[in-house]
Length: 133
Picture 1 (tube, rainbow, N blue to C red):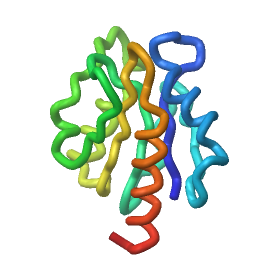
Picture 2 (picture 1 turned 45 degrees about the vertical axis):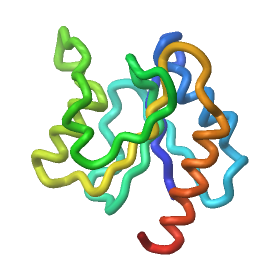
Picture 3 (picture 1 turned 30 degrees about the vertical axis):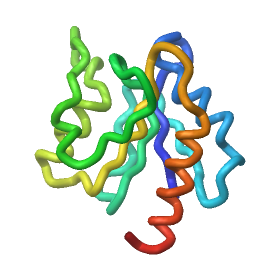
């Protein structure tokens, strides 16, 4: 199962998901991380199920965001055409009907992220993927 990881290593408030993915890289059998650079187009257009690990502003703990909950994500401020973030891209792909089932593992921007919870979520997602759910 591929897990797409978003963030920017040069921005302190946006690199936590990258750091966690590096720590988890060989910890879960069946999971491979795909690191997506800032302002890169998403590489999962048309996939049946997409799993994303990303830092989310304003959450106190690790959360799962799925289905229509994507519509509740707040767009980042944009000053140019280069500022279209993940939320914008997901909504756009959904509107074009090119976004399959999507699961976002949201990591809090502030404080410590619960490593064991993320590990557990990924193990469950792998098990569901193997079962074909």
